[in-house]
Structures are given as C-alpha cells and as structure tokens.
Length: 334
Image (tube, rainbow, N blue to C red; front, side, top):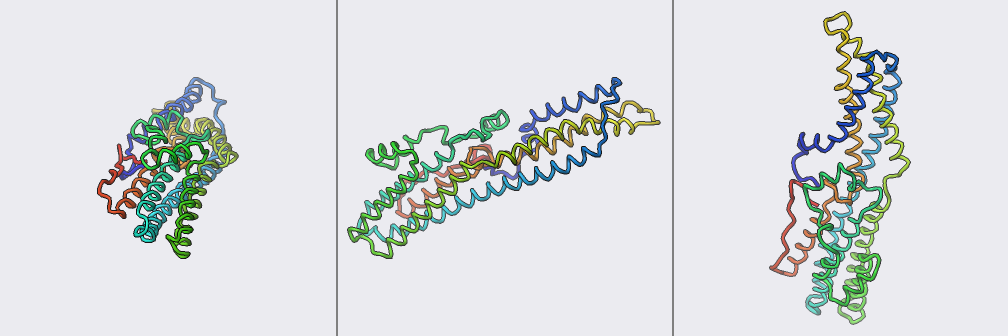
C-alpha cells in the first residue's frame, strides 16, 4: 500500500515510460508517412471517437471492479483485526486463571495462522502482474516480506517442533492451524475449563476467522474474468492504434492558409500520445489494483496488519518484548 500523499508525477511517468515509448512510435509512424505523401492513411475521426466511447465505458467498468476487489480485501482484513482482538480477550478471560499455558499456546497459534495465511495469499498466480517488467521494476523500491523469508522459519517462532512438522506436511497450512485451535478448544471444554457459553463465544470467533480466510482465498484464486479482461485489452489496443490515423487530417487542416501550413501535422504526435496515454494509463491503474494480495504497491498491507494484530494480542498478555511495527519503505508498506 502506498502510504504517501500521492504518487509523484515523475514516479508516475517513470512507471508508464515503457508505454509512452511505444505510444510515441505508434503516433510517429503514420504522421511521418502522411508527411511524406501517403495521404490515404487518414481515416475519419468519427468512428474512432465512437470506439473511444466504448473503450472508456469498458475501462471504467474494469477499474470499478478492480476497486471493488481491493476494497473487499481490505474489509476482510479489517474484520480479521477486530475478530482477533475479540478472540484474544475472550480467550484470555475464559482461561487465564485455569491454564495460562494453553492461552499462550493458542495465542501463538493464532500468530502462526496469520503468518501462514499471508504467505498463502502472496503465492504468485499466472494472471497476476508482479512478474511484468513495469511492476517488477517498481517493486525494487520496497520489500515483499514473504519473498525475503521462508514460511518454515517464520512458523518456528510460534509452534512446537512437533506441531510445526505436522502443519508443514499439510497443503493448506492456515486451515490446519485453525483446526488445531478448534481441537484445543474442544479439549478445554471436555475438561471443564470453559463452560457452554464461553465455548460458544470462542468457537464463533474461530468460525469468523475461517470465513474471512475463505473470502480472501476467493479473491486470490478467482481472477478478474478473463473474457472482460481480454476484450478490454483488444479494444484498447485497436483504439490506440487508430487514434493517430484519425487525427492526421484534422491537424493537417489546422495550418491551412497560414505560414505553418504543412507543418501542423507534427502536432499529431504529442496530441495522439496524450489521448492514448490517458486511456492506457487508466487501464494500467485498474490492472495494478485488480489482484490485491499479489505484492504490488497498491496491495492491502497484510503483513503490516498481521504484525499489528500480534502486537495488540501480546499486549493483552502484558508482554513487554513486543515485535517492532512494520514501517513504510519509500512510502510503501505491505
């Protein structure tokens, strides 16, 4: 997540510079050929304007869908924050006087669940964009914690060796950690350490965590529909290619009966670049937000949120050796 006031103009232009180079070439080729006498290259601008209207609608639709996915992801982790705090003090108050060791174990397992979940959500998918040159270059400005460490090493901080090996043998580690919480809770209930009401309260929190995990996995594993994504790409490409051809005659007429007659055609390059860059960049912004867990600068900061939850819950147990909060690097925090 970008935590600054805004992306700087230079930063934004640098991020889109590869597109700018390509758009300049696409605008320059028909302009040069037209200047050399290939007047038949000019096409009426009206059908291109109609195409532009269609592109604007479909790019706007994509951006709206991208923002919805991003905002839903943030709401999911907002719920995890609130539910974790509730889980922490309900569990503490129910068990601390009877078995403080069990409370500590279940707190640690919850940190492990947060860790396993964020590692699973950071796993790459073929449709994500972090492997592209545009996104990969910008990623050098910040660190993706899940790429700098291994899950095994992170879980060692929270789990016993036996439980660690058991969890690592499973495919969905986060699910199995939550199942471990349920098992621990059932054992406490059978021993009479908690009553019916307390068991129901804590169990409801575990159900909420499972629900939030499932929602996050749905966003992670179900991409923006490929049919919508593909048609947006194709229509945008057609529009970008045809814009310079549609403006040729308009800029050529601009200098008629004046001292710059014949030279105003060169205005076609910068103005075509401006129009096509706007549309292409709007599409790129939507693409940058459509996968909110991939590890880009526009992601939900799940690592920071997980650390915040851990600090809050350790504070509930009056621990003094708290882990440090995660701070932004170059205004980016993940």
